Length: 332
Ligand code: ASP
Image 1 (spheres, helix red, strand yellow):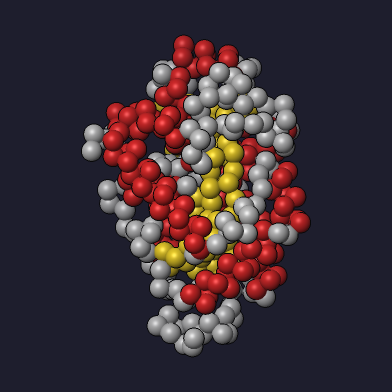
Image 2 (tube, rainbow, N blue to C red):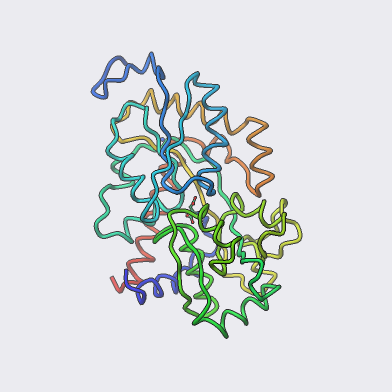
């Protein structure tokens, strides 16, 4: 998409305010009655250390205990999460390859003309996992102290300010576009393969600001390693009680939250999906997972949401929504 195109997308993101932001031996070769017999690879389509990786590792531990095999995280990053998702789409549909992805699963079809997979047709959803608020943060040596000062500073210095994100269609990219659109500015975007490495460079002062999930920002905010300006939620985040919301700061249209879900290739047997869903649901009621998520500003979804049905419904709705928004922004 051209820079003008991305600007137009941003113009429509405001409309999203309030939108939140599933035998016997079969063709796969897996005997569902015996599943799982071996380690399960979980593809995270962003770099290690970022928010998608963090949430995946949180649930991998109790799911490994529950299933009696190891869930092994593989970070296959690049192109806003589409490289890892593409590999998951073509993996053997035997339940031994699972994908963790977020809202980017629903934005990619409209943003990538050459997308090698169909997020709906090529996968079975296993269940939703969590929905994570975002925060607007900056390097500790970035001049503005408050969100109001940030707005003025970015508007006056747009030609020199830099903004990190995790590739086209990533949550940080979408949130950043929404933010800069609300401010009426264009800044230099610096893409990374995930916001884990982006955070390292932000802390190091190599890039100025970023919009990212609390699962990657709460620790650094609390430790004072970054400046935090606002939470992109209607209410303040419990783990960050001093952080004002964008609404409090006079920018109510900047509201984004990032839903995550687990997927398997489309031909995976339903019995295998059911075992993964059951295990996911158990992990999401694990007190350790609940506590870790709470410390990072989020919570597990309800049991009803951690189902293939609820996950499929949200994916379809969000894919249609983003197709409309992005299509309109590109004049389609
Ligand atoms: N937070 C990233 C995003 O902006 C992805 C990640 O590194 O987990 O989509």
